[in-house]
Length: 568
Figure 1 (tube, rainbow, N blue to C red):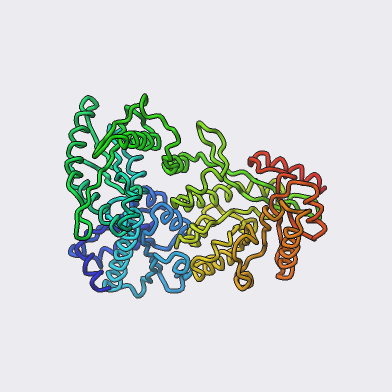
Figure 2 (figure 1 turned 45 degrees about the vertical axis):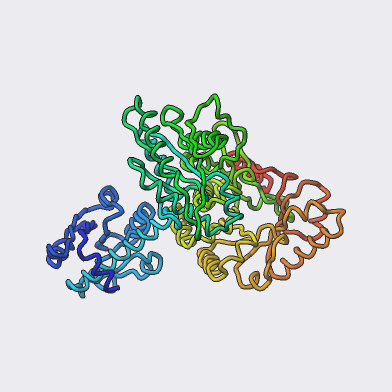
């Protein structure tokens, strides 16, 4: 810790101070010296703080305004600048708010009655160390661990930024030919060696930006070009330099291996200004280059590069869809079998594609899971559902809205903390919120999963176990975790009545749920015969096309109004 503090002592640090009365600023100025390398900017209101704060500053707050206002300011700041350290000053120890330290671990609190220069500097240096640690973690999120260049997430954002600024550029993608065969013959360690060497050779090329590894052996980079008239000339010169770097063999073990590469190029704005389209075009050009022998390249040509379902990834399109808010939520009602009324709903994502229309989740969720995009998309779903809940509650629903949490989301160490912030920010009524977990999600880091669920349960959020019976449920976990509802997978419902095995499984799940004091919901109910069977087995709730497919929020609200009239 001492080494870390000494390392930041030479850095100049901006301090942003919320001090409406101007009472704290002279105290701090009297304790700080020029050699401490701190600059202090005072502002009188939360609005001024938010306008002038940047991610490299430290935020200091004099806790004179109402505590709820300070809480909300800190929440807004940390949503905009995740990981930014905050130090709160109070006049007396009695005014300190311990809940801030519990809920916001990047906050320190100092009491003016015991404040001295040593204590102030210690707190400021510690905050600097915290900021550096957070920056390092953020850097890890956008860096490829093997090569040290940018990763896919970094590149997509970098390309999007360049296009939004109107930069004329060449997008260049490169990969090895027959890399899978190389891996199979020589092993993945050898594959890692040549990928690392390829990244070094590409990094040595002049004039490029944002070199990133966006696939196992696929790299992308940007060549910015100021003059549209020389774009092909500049690109050709760079391609010749790249090919020259790629010609030597690769050292693998005790020998040399010769590997050829293919290169695809697309120009912005000539070919497209949409980053997902541009990536696709460069990929199509690279596929055409592979038809030649040796190190080869191709510039996108719409006459030659037709998309014949070449397996170009959906990821860029999905990332753009998230940025442009093309996703929408549909709601599938749950029906209480005792009253016949709507008692809840499951929130289900759809993609409103500008060209292909409404796309069902089974077409894109697997790609989201594979790439990790399911994590930010999952947070979007929570945010959208949280906003919709107010209208849903006003329309008369007193039950739960189910939101799916995937295995990949539980790998996010900030899951519980982020959900807490969304709940506070959107003022979500947690009594209406239910997270639907898959059995797979429970069998990752058991301690982490348990802690997340218990933290969120303490907020009033309920949990259900989705697709029950298809995985490897641990009855001990069902007893340990605050899971209130089991959902019977539709694959079992499809076989009832008529299939004796499915009938027995459904009976057993309903009996188990009730014996554990849990509710049970049957998914995928499509026929009257299925409904009658479930009523006889004392199932609590059902959802499925027999009652309603997933519908838009507008239609769901109309259904709730009719439901309220039915209830009298």
